[in-house]
Length: 189
Ligand SMILES: C[S@@+](CC[C@H](N)C(=O)[O-])C[C@H]1O[C@@H](n2cnc3c(N)ncnc32)[C@H](O)[C@@H]1O
Image 1 (cartoon, rainbow, N blue to C red):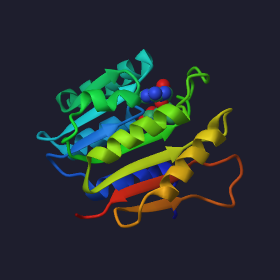
Image 2 (cartoon, rainbow, N blue to C red):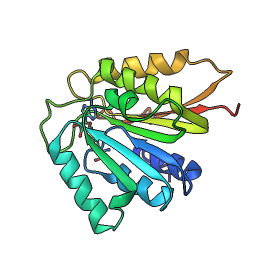
Image 3 (spheres, rainbow, N blue to C red):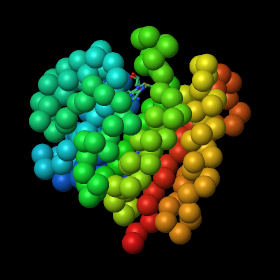
Image 4 (cartoon, protein in one colour):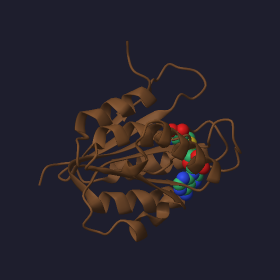
């Protein structure tokens, strides 16, 4: 059976993340991606996770503690647009993931925004390791969602093919705006 965009994002992460790697969860939310990547990077790797909502941090922290993985992640109560202030330029990010939109069952007015998402994408690409992947799963059914989706699509289409391969994964015959996945992979130097 074909995988949903969300499931496929985990397949794409699992294919590349290995013990010792550095990963970024740019939209922590309920912590599913942080937990998933904390398992994959092992004891020697690390996950840097961002969200602007305290609830997201608390839920993610609980999940990590339950799984005894809390030492593998740093959780930041700040926007992903500040990644450049947290991770030095030479940090080799092996994988980064965004789930664009709002946190389900939470305040629907707190959404990711094109301007800050773009800043974070720029900062991550500056640090993306060879064969590293930047994955975005865009939910766009809410007000402002289409603008952000358009920004991400345009951004991806403009990336030079000599340096990056870009994948777009979506179901084109489904109702209710199913999420659309983009995966940017840096080519080997
Ligand atoms: C679709 S949810 C993420 C779901 C998450 N991946 C999970 O596993 O549950 C989007 C999240 O982005 C967060 N967000 C909004 N603006 C942000 C920003 N500038 N930086 C980081 N996170 C942001 C929201 O608070 C929300 O929790």
